[in-house]
Image 1 (cartoon, rainbow, N blue to C red):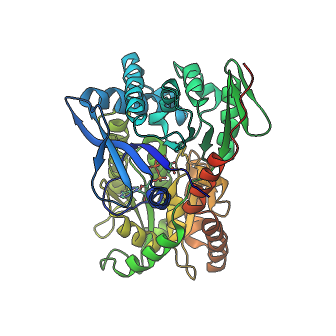
Image 2: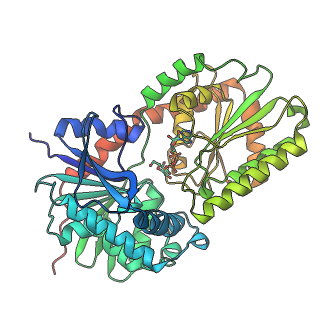
Image 3: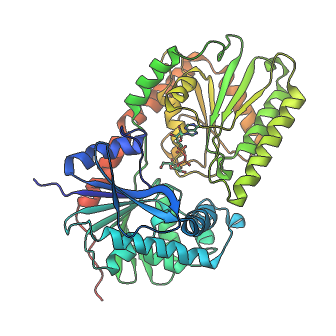
Length: 459
Ligand code: ADQ
């Protein structure tokens, strides 16, 4: 049976000659097997925008890149995508920075990309669009006559009706979404919000079969919880744990780890406060525990990100000032990217991971941490109920990240949890991660996209 070529489109084009990171690894095989292509922004900005896609040398599959102008990076990427959509998708309408020209730039970039893409897609290619930067792409492709199967996977949560209503162009966004054959979301809760939010807008009808009718278009919507390459990450952790530099882990000092982009959705101030509350309640743990928080910078120049950086740094300083002595600082805060291999080793060395976002599409750190554990002596995952991962990872210690006292108590429970219970939780979590890894995820999405197309309502 002939398999259609896959065209993957994402904001950033994967870099490097060897695929790394779960998503790229999972799609690399399908792209290579079907002779497919990955299309994305090169990351470069200049005075002039590219008029055609340019091939990028190397790598296991074909890549085509486009450049953006500085004004496009400001309006499309930093503006509408990251200062309007991202806050709305994470229930933070208060952090939106609405600039009407940014929306025009966002649409123009998507229109230009569609114009370049239409020249490279053949009639029976299937197109897989990733994430909130490219919501109008299918709409623009349809306007150019593309009848291909087009799927969208949204890596973030989907907004509830009251959040969607705060989007200045909610109706237009619904129209963009309707142009996909398949919209993939992270969780069943997101699917429910999608149906409710779109039904709250004019002309939308949500059927019981996963089909949502919007005006004259029917779209299939379903949950495809993204994951990691579980086996590969577990092996990496075993190897890297052996080569951790001496002194990183001290026998009399438990390591608690947090790894998140420095984003206001990740709940870092609440996490630090909870750690401080735990230290206040448990003096016996002073000098016997330290929190290593690794948070690389992200989206610098977007105002809300400067604010969260200042707040997080000030809090870490204040807590260290309050509790540290000459031999111990309770929080080590690293504002840098750390190699994936090194992260894997650190996860395995950590007795506890704090994954406490206020809102998160999935959260792959939670899955990486579990995959990295020693099954005979595993650490404990403290997981926010508001991470998409919470739907699958019922055996983590789930917490409400806003409830500082509850998180503080969970940190203590995790540190003193008997080995038998740790092993029981780990076993069940790992079972889930092995059954539904990133290869399962991409196969499930592609099977649905290749399956019967939703029948369109009559005009
Ligand atoms: P992110 O918000 O970036 O992703 P997450 O799922 O946790 O969140 O993925 C982050 C990745 O970056 C992990 O693989 C992690 O190891 C890595 N990383 C984090 N900090 C790092 C550091 N200091 N150095 C090196 N690597 C680091 C978005 C959505 C999520 C969704 C994913 C995938 O916001 O909800 O799970 O996409 O769909």
